[in-house]
Length: 209
Image 1 (cartoon, rainbow, N blue to C red):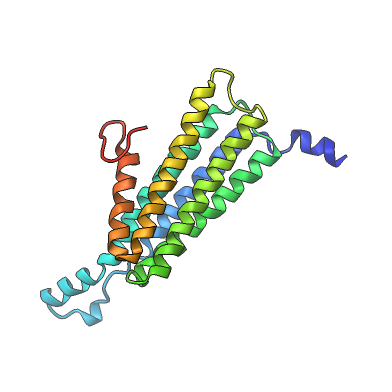
Image 2: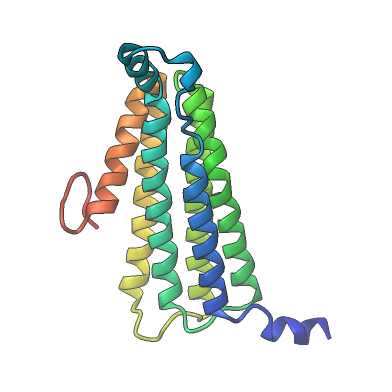
């Protein structure tokens, strides 16, 4: 009976896409909640307000970085879902694992904003990105192996998806490794990588796939 249930469980692409959209929307909203407006009781002049806003810079930078991160990975997941003929129970659970990594992003973002000078905070943030990439790659590998992708998706197109994910993760890893120099250098490269993937093919900043 369990084997029979597994044959038809988790086959709704529409429900999976709807759930994913909701989780991404919630996570994007939670990101901005990490930016706290200065308390009026502590602000008594324009200069004091200016200093308070400058102090929010780490929160603003990490917010924008994570907004790009989630936007890129949302596009990646939607691209995959659009190429599937159907899903199955295993693929659905893989994408639920993907959404788990999505919901961790506000935590790793706030941790990095609070400890932006600490390498450990930067590495944890990178591990969050790595987890997103690994699960997204695992989803594509499983779907192609289980013949869940559309027939018109050629072997070259399948390989291109893998190359894109691996290349992006390689650049993210390089960015994380630069934290031995400075966490700010790491953040700068990660943002450049994100801008490349967010703006391509209209612009070619680092790497065109």
